[in-house]
Length: 346
Image 1 (cartoon, rainbow, N blue to C red):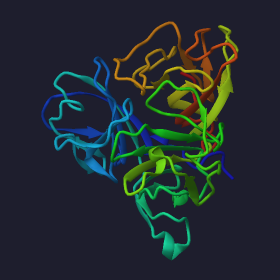
Image 2 (image 1 turned 45 degrees about the vertical axis):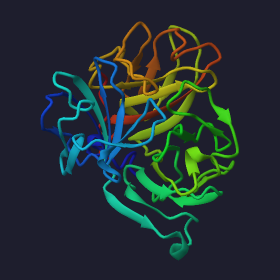
Image 3 (image 1 turned 30 degrees about the horizontal axis):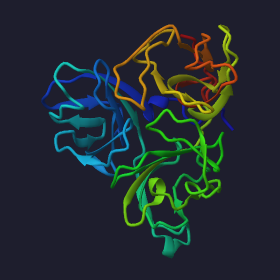
Image 4 (image 1 turned 180 degrees about the vertical axis):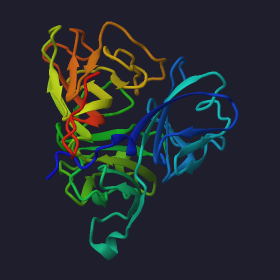
């Protein structure tokens, strides 16, 4: 088996920088962007999240538990090479430097649970098994149930939002296990509860939701973003900090294009880095998905390496004493391609 089946990660994930024009503009991603996550970099505008399953005018925000809203001039259409923006002031305000993170799904998915005997709750959405990513829409029942995710592999991270009311985001992370959950729009440390994922690990076909409204409110619409690790392309994992200027090295098996991380055992911000806003080491520009603040940078930073990333400071954001951190990362280039080409350092 080849080291990786994905030699060109930008076929499935890409970061794009653009400047708003308060009009109409096409954003070139390189593929149809089925999950779009954008943030104005220079001001306190919210992170806005949309996808091709709900439609580009349906917006939720990573930094707030607010219900989904409709913005007719947000993303006015998905194209084979990206998407088209309207004149919405959040995503396309004139002069705003904006970052857009983009993931490709693309294969329509439906599961009638009573017909297929896969899961107990009907689901539908868009799936990319090559890239280990699916967008799954379902309606809550208020009772323990299972939902088909379409990946054909056990998910390593599941991010769920109740679309219909002001519930917090909930997320499952494989390094933490199904007895735990992380609330995405907060700084909260990891919490233990049986009413999110019913203390049940996802399988290669389904994930389990329990009775809490964040993941399964009766009669309401929810959306789940599911990811499984793909060698040479994506990785969900954890690391232990050492509070040393020669910080922890985290092996990924690829040169990263994007990393999101958070200390899981204490209340800390989430942080997001990418290879476009910081085009060389040190990677010091970050945004916080749990708040609407502008892009920041400072003495606390990481280095993107050919096969992973390294913490380069003693600060508590990324290298707190006795800290345990979770992360999610996507590749710019695999450490070694399927034809034996090694990744280059920055």
